[in-house]
Length: 371
Image 1 (cartoon, rainbow, N blue to C red):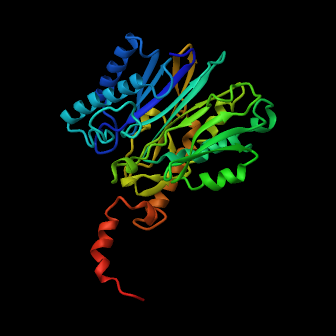
Image 2 (tube, helix red, strand yellow):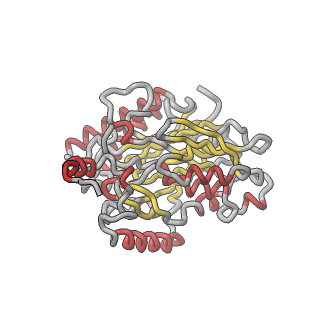
Image 3 (cartoon, rainbow, N blue to C red):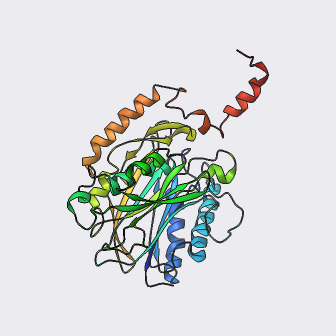
């Protein structure tokens, strides 16, 4: 146990109704009871249970550091209990993200996604938890880049001396399983060269630079980077990532963080994980995927963390100021749908490996002739 606070966000698809639309409230109650018991036992300081589309989201604070076996087993056992109820209710995709039979130390490589940060609390510690459904980890690349490197999004990078020096990006190659640390603004173009290929290079963490207000070894943002198709070996759904961002006092302001998500940019996922569509920011009450199993949704919950206690949440996108962004997303969704099975609505061939397309090609392989 450490003196620092750990903020853990762990999620999984344990079943939903109808189809991939919405988590059932009875399974959320199972999760709440499980985490409440762990809180009373002293494992957790505080927690919140929520959902984004068909994903159950566990937000937990504790003093045990990241990748703690007890905390991760709690999350795993919670998902297992929720799955048992989901199966009794014949919910769709019950236990979809639980790809292993037994817990093996932490949830990495087992199906659920996780984003965790351990940090020294400041006098006031605003933390925002973002959760997405029907998309992939790379969906965070554009907004996180804008928040921590784009002065048109974050004017504090220009006018606030405490963040004027920029930030360090930890970027993962999720195909070759490698990582690289890169500095903005010095390596801005090189960073963009990588993270523009969002299906392969994803932002994992953001760190402060040395000499600033915050310790350089404590992350200020963290994104889940789990790739379900690499775990299962076949298509079992998109990764539906989550992320945590700290704000204010040596970091971008809360409003600058939210501004990074105001543009409904195109992300991969949507129907059958095989289509590009707009990311729509919504309040939790609207975090249900309907049209064409989407479009991809984003929710954001804001907290003040006080000695590990969660003050909140503030449902950050449940605000009419985002109505225009939602209408724009709806317009983009309609435009993309008009393409039907054609690219760029459908993903390119290299991203269709775990669909029926390889079977179609195999069936036709004897019928292709040379030009």
